[in-house]
Amino acid sequence: MTTARVRRVEVPQVVPGGEDLADSDYVSAFELTAPRARARTPEEWARATFEGAPAPVRWLLAGGWTLGLGLRLGPRTSPAHVLGWPVPDCGPDSITLAAASRLVAARNVVVVDGVRVIWVTSVRFHGRVGRAVWAVAAPVHHLAVPFLLGRAGRRG
Image (cartoon, rainbow, N blue to C red):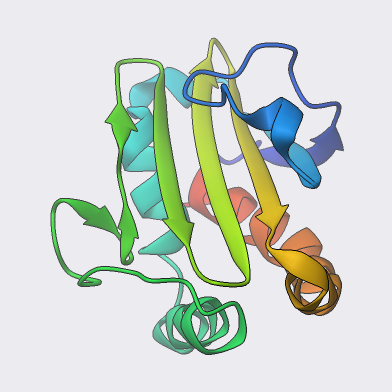
């Protein structure tokens, strides 16, 4: 998968497991174009993206999610979680990772569609503090997801 390319795209109209997108305060989508995208399941893409990151990056992500956003995550090495993110829905074409805190409720949906892997993130704020915390986290998100998804695509 050496020809992987990631770009920000419009959020798809229909996202599996994303029934609450209309209620979201923030939504973004990134698309990886890779000729062999279907060589991995959505779960394998999610794991390659988050769990395949270098150890220092994994620690920074987990710290930002738990200490910064206050997300309640599970064990990072659990097969029922992806780097601590609970998996409420997983199918042949998509996986949903969802976590919440008193500040935000966040959801990542990874969809494999032909030669594309689409990573959709939605966040609901719980009050002004949640909005302010996400304002700090969003720029990191805009850098991290394309970088990590592209890295996963190149390492396929």
